[in-house]
Length: 170
Image (cartoon, rainbow, N blue to C red; front, side, top):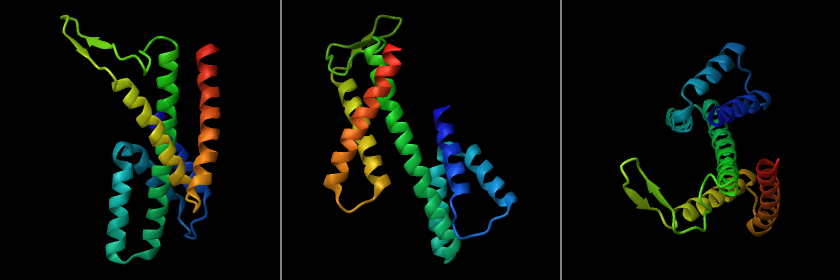
């Protein structure tokens, strides 16, 4: 559900953004349905089409595909990274998942075979935060990275903490 939500957001944003090219409704419908049908591989497919447009020398199509690829990757990475942090935190706070700092966690199957995962949950939790920070920095694309990181860390930490608190305690 969340995967297809990112594609729908991308399609809506792409259709509302003036690209300087007049496309017919049929072309927009065809491109949108292709994005929806091929969503799991859509970012890679659009990047490949963009490279093929560059090789063919079609500047107009290259610009559109470049814009669409950056848009799809930015929306997908921002949405998925923040959802990972929110869901992982919610599952940890409600006791459905071991906390990221618990090193004694084990996964056992129905035969009694157990595997200790130690710091794996902490590693995954930190990677989710780093992915969110990287996606945010890529989305803004400004020159002064220190100011941007400071702004994003305070904003993201506050907003995601509020979402996690609302999910956990409501």
